[in-house]
Amino acid sequence: MDTARRAGPSETNEDLLVAVAGGNRESFRRLYDATSPALFPICLRMLRDRESAKEVFQDAFFRIWQKAYLYDPAKGSALAWMVTITRRCGLDRLATSRSDMVSLEEIDESLIAEASARLGRASVEGVGLKRCLEQLDGKHSRAILMAYFYGLTHEELAAKLGVPLGTAKSWVTRGLARLQECMGG
Image (cartoon, rainbow, N blue to C red; front, side, top):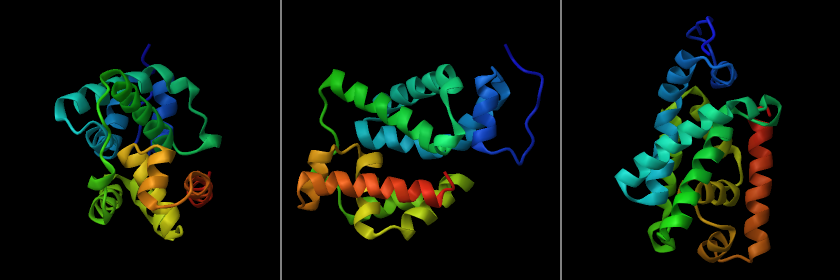
């Protein structure tokens, strides 16, 4: 059921997601337009196949539409919530297709820089996320980018970064906590 309310140009992703939870299709379209530049590349990097990425991306937005009522602004940003859903859809596809994720050899500094730059172009929220990532210790931001943009597991992170598994987990956990603080969550 669509709500009659129309969103203004100053509405945030959080406002749009709350409207989507109420069934507002126009808000869903605007949310899609605002966040697609940040979310589709996640699918593409994880799956490394444009057609598979499109399917997973579509599945992610279908889940976002269905599960919008579960979003809690007190727990983090709308984009972070949507990234989590998108990553889970990608990981589900990888598990069922038994495809390999991006190989460790393919992830280098230029890919990390590209992911960070893409955030800055994505949206106002993306620019804020990029700013917060830049404020983190380099090891934390790199671990987060490798895990969330390229789908690396903690074990793969540890191997790629040449650190013990517990250290890799700690870097991601601490980095995410600092990101949440920086983003106002």
